[in-house]
Image (cartoon, rainbow, N blue to C red):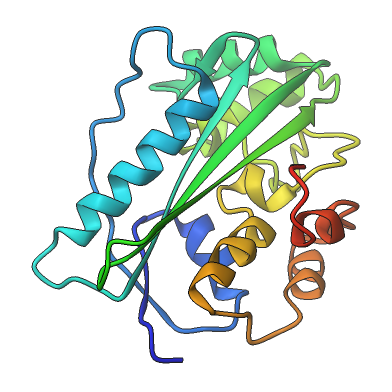
Length: 221
């Protein structure tokens, strides 16, 4: 593969997911202003930030061939939930999310430096939270795990396992929807080096019901 892939993120979860793709890549985090604009919808917000991250990374002293940028937000109704600043805020978020379904939005922006070609994708996933007990919630918050995660939870946390009955893209809830990424990379004539759906499902221990539709171009998440 001639193009160099660069991930504009320092997220360990995104690095782990992108590694499943089978190609080598560099990590070049991009810092941008993540302030929410007045009245901005969650989908518009994550796409704007993903594009901003791609542009910021492209402006670095060492421009790459192809930038991959992403942004993920948790939305409960009209409220966008960021990363909790402390345990009390995490506890409040998790109590609010308990036993009902919210949405996770992940925006992708891919930019080829040579010609400025930009491709975006948006994945929206319905996330049904289980009715975890107060004790489970408090134990999880005390672990410190919620503090670096939008919405205050990690879907992959095996002890807390906050999500029950997911029928969408689990990789997107973790920060990088791999089939949507595959679809975007097709625009640049880059294909996976592996059977990506099989590797993703095996790695996440999750049977994904939507990957054929996503890879076929349907707008599902």
